[in-house]
Image (cartoon, rainbow over all chains, first blue to last red; front, side, top):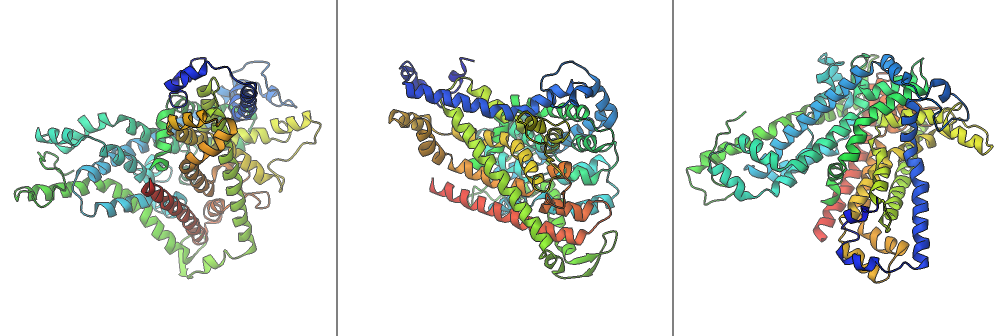
Length: 297
Length: 315
């Protein structure tokens, strides 16, 4: 942990090093102590829900029902994990969520790569206007379109199906926006050379452009996957069959069911959060890129 | 899809000096451009633009008991929003929005500024503060529902330790909205920390170093140097959090279902209730409300684009 500072060139770069040897004044030391104390006070409530979900998953129902609540488990049991699967058909809901988020992510990647390619590399009359129209779709909140989408898609008999779950989200301007910025940085000569060699557009995209745009593609994928994985409103209205619900809706069923008990709820929440937790810990760099796309430019 | 075998030699938009033989190819590439845009355009047209227009249509019609549009009623559905019940819903939406955005942004700002001090373990701390971002609306809400349990929840456990009487977190009219707000602030904190620390990371190290050499330390460095430099990110975070709050739905559906006595019914929740809660199917009224939501979000986005546009021009 003592090496953490070296990984942060932005704040304590080379110029700062000789100055670090200078001894801190008592006021500075007091300030640092305050900073540590404040951070410690703040991080406890921030991490507590995660801690409690993790610990509660392995506590017995009896132990979870004690009052005042125990914060440190006295025993260890897999009962909640086993029972939660029976209560909401967790495997199936997990699969549904993976399919929904996976299909939407792949589809948004494909459609955005094509669209961004057209905007950057292909001739297009009124390019600026078309792109502005593309971006303007981002201003439409999905909630404002759910009623007609629900009427239309259930009218096609696609409620309680995977196509019904994913259809409204198969493309979004967000990915196009981000990829267009990245494609614009692509060296023109490299593309001209590839084209000169008789390479077609699709082959250029799949062989050269996509492999060289990996960081942006990762940012788009993670962003789309996370938001879709967490989606609540649309799956709630377009599915009502227990086998076609997504994990998020299953969590609500766990909470409101007759058999509701804190052990099952915490186990369900904990299991559902593991994939996104891993993404936040290991994919932070890419997530931040996706999140701040609008803030930087 | 259109043939992609095309030895395109000229970059697009090379202008008038293009050879005549290239014109056919140029037209071909123009068609190809539209072919590449087509999948996105198709999805936008069918699932965004058309539904938005149809929402306008629905909002101007009454509906029968199963929700089919009936007679043209003009702006009656909008006029129906001029009632005290609706004033309550708008007030709830405003309270929820301000109540989540203000402490959420302030908290995230405080955290990233503290992390900017010369402390050890900064990365570990930052990841720790970002972790709530991993929680979905549903997972955060159900975990907090356990905390809010009046008989066995952690929050009443804390009150008990301080010899205070237990509280009905979700069923008391005074507290329910604040319990929803607390859940939402916690849930959004990670997002704010990630956005703002990315902003701090983008600040030139020499600016901070120069300020330090000039004797700016601690809160003075934070307040006079870092906060102004974070301006664009703070603004972005405020607008996005506002839009998110306006669309906040899952936590209300899971924790209170808009109750008690409509105390936690916001605009989005009211749309859901009118259109989809069992037995209502009032698609006309819900559509009118959805359009109001659309307009509010539109104004927020327009403000965001406007200000960011200006920033880009000035820099």
